[in-house]
Image 1 (cartoon, helix red, strand yellow):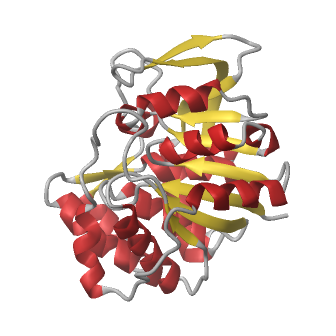
Image 2 (tube, rainbow, N blue to C red; image 1 turned 120 degrees about the vertical axis):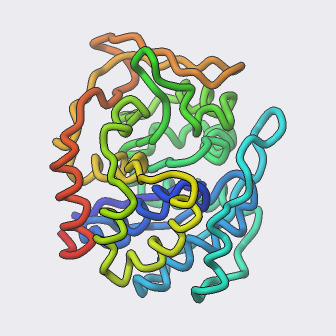
Length: 287
């Protein structure tokens, strides 16, 4: 049976969100139920997500969510990749203010079947859990690209952008509460030239275009978000440890304590070569 997935994303700054969405759209085992966007200029982010959905020939509900953190001023800048919208057909009208309710209704319509994949700040998810505290227990999985669980890493960007939201999300009880953190994702990287050379597929053409602003300032792509997504369909790509995550709401730093009966699991190993092979095989071959 296909995996039912809800994606919550801050697509538009780091290119890995678009790389992740392309993977989900190509993954034959993914039933992508909807996309919600979060943080600065969420409507522009929704438009960027719609570019990839259109190229894939998919009609996926896309809803802009929260544009500011629960507490404090915004940290994230508007999406630099929005410049690519002038070159690609995209949606411009979205149901504003309905993202959290859409997530709530979708999860309640499929109890025990939905994986909520979060690859941005956790504002939308914290609001969802506040509105309906039963939701975490109705998920099949909660999978986050977030946190850093080894000394010398972090604070990780998604947690840092809204640490109060992150603290609430980590306090929620889900049957599988998984984090793929910075200390593991940074091991999976390609230089810009090698990545662009492998973008010879219609679904990756807009990704390569959006990546121009990213590669203008750095020479590589790190597969933070796609790695988190891939663990849903190929869990052997990473190893996981069980324990408890804490969040410092002042800094967004994540603490980790190993515990056999802990409520959280975090990735602690990864096979980078296997991931790269899996990613491009999925996008190019649908498997």
